Image (cartoon, rainbow, N blue to C red; front, top):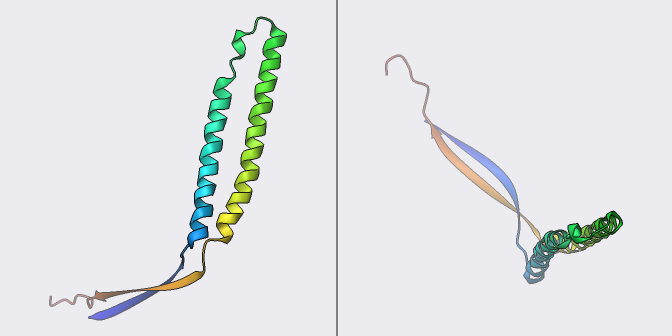
Length: 110
């Protein structure tokens, strides 16, 4: 019997209090902006206007509003994402050791 030992290093990080706060703010911001995008796009009912010019103006305004939400979403996600990234905790290297028994190759007599 041959005992085989496999070693593996894994990087683990433990978040502190502020790390969790910034991570929750980051995910909350993304959820809020996704909700705002869906609600804002659904609220644009441009078919109610009578003339083509009014409908085009409504569509242009809805497009500008959606682009503003997307821009604010991107800027906020970068800021909150950086805060969450930089408060993720200290790096700890954890070593996992796996031991397994491997039998000898079977001979003709077995």
